[in-house]
Image (cartoon, rainbow, N blue to C red; front, side, top):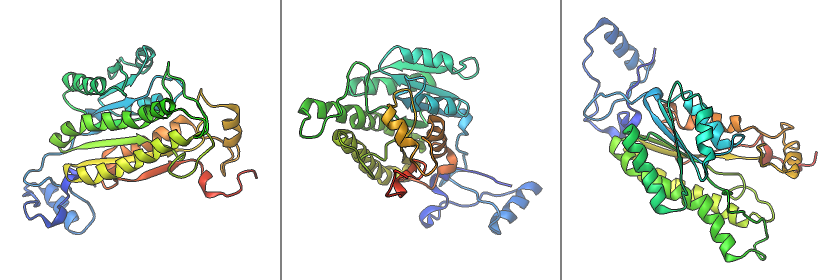
Length: 308
């Protein structure tokens, strides 16, 4: 038996204002007895006992969901099955096709075309979604690496132009910064929020020639995440990252597919496997996890010799 109240301040920090409410019914007295014996956990917000919203009442916003075979759309599919409202965004009109593919007959899917490297557009997107749904509970920062109409070059640092460096930092890092900053005031006000960054093993843990800007951006995302985790923890907000390794998508090259076959599991991962990790960190059950990165790479970073 599990009774669940807000995990925002589960009698945290010895706050004497947080107390067990008066149980009147026989069932409630049993629950109180179980609680006192450590068999169930009940979470209380200080001063009141309002329950957190369940996932089917929540609104999730996923960026970078334009590709039908990509990680962002896989995350959108999974959260659409769990949440009351899902909003997806990309830089082109194909995002509206993705929305129609998500069985909008059950839970309407909101789709937005926006350039999230633009501060005004990022802020306008969040404001528009709040007007439509009244809340944003989950933000998944998946946009990054490349942007339709803005090709990225995998050149070495020495060969890279400053404009190419700036473009990659803007697409991968600035989008996450602008979206996170835009949703935080609302999440802080409602005393609840889940932010999940789709980061990478490339940069924070490993690298490849030609990945200097991308790796720098992903490493910076992790640093930003840890600072935000400390700044927002008392507002009931958690922020975490999921770091994929070799994941086979429509944009995977043959070299990347071969590399995926040399992981300990003998294959590349799938977008759905990344989405499963994201959906857990976006759930109320992940209430005591913040500022952490979950690696989804089939154990690849564990092995020194990847050729066998």
